[in-house]
Image (cartoon, rainbow, N blue to C red; front, top):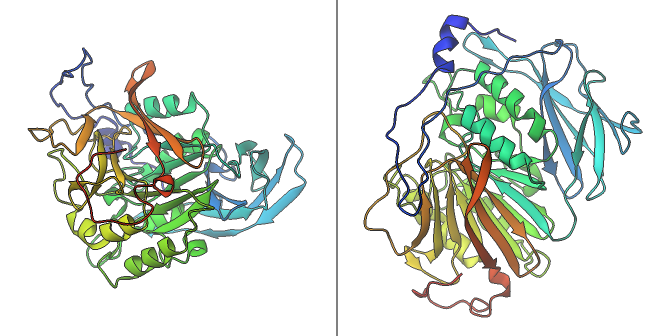
Length: 438
């Protein structure tokens, strides 16, 4: 794998912005400035696995992904329920890519299973290196999600990850902007090393953001070369033809990962796939439906205004008719929660939109919100943090936004939600109303 040029990346490691400090109106909390980018070096042998992360595949399988510098390492995962005792194994595939003068290591992807729910498995990649472990999600509710967007690899990223790790969860959802490599490919490797202690233990399900595009005219015209090679999601299992959009189900929850940077207009592949995917959901068996995307459809921050409007106009009706419960958005580096909304009006049968692009990116916070506050926007704050969504049962869930505050996290926004599938108001579709109801 190409080594870093110290002179080239010394600047990246000291990237910092100098935004003003902003004091919250409702307390004495002072907005924190961005922190420096952290480059995490490779400290294992060339044959040992690095950048290990896992993702869900179907109802009882897991994909294990990792990178080796050695081209001779095998795409093999050994696993079992006891540490050091591996009574099962699976072989997979590998790939690699080049980007200008950068050549990736050997990128391995192995699907293992079938696996039992709520069970800890120990595993080893490539028959060498350290042992890892993960816990599978439950097969029935309750279920705990972590939701974090625009993560990056800064000191704030580390703070967010430490807070996430402090309380157990089942699955992590990330609505785009992972590494902030922005064509500097060694930063993809660094990101994989930063998240490995977390992403190797619980499944991380991601979709793309604008920082994953990495298009270079003529030479790399289609983009997403690194993202698709390193973070393949189970798109084929959901009938999608692209890694940029897919869906999966876990414990009574259907999760739709939309692609803000794939074609989405009516008649497009993504539109037709979404239409068919939503039509297959049985709300008696799957009471919750959640969607994720990157460029916000609803946003009162002055940053990235209108960037998701065309996608909203194309697809919002599909989500509304399918009674999607929540939509998580990234891109804007702040937190914001809206009421249930459809077509720019409060609607008790529309999704709740939540912007969660505050994971720890190097660009800093989006500090400016529109004034006066829209009645659709119920809570908004420019701070780093993450969210937790607990699906308690078939009818109720608890959402909380956890603000980073150095050594501890603060639960700053919390609300109970009722599933639309259990709502008498929404049992039969009516015309959109202006009633503000969770």
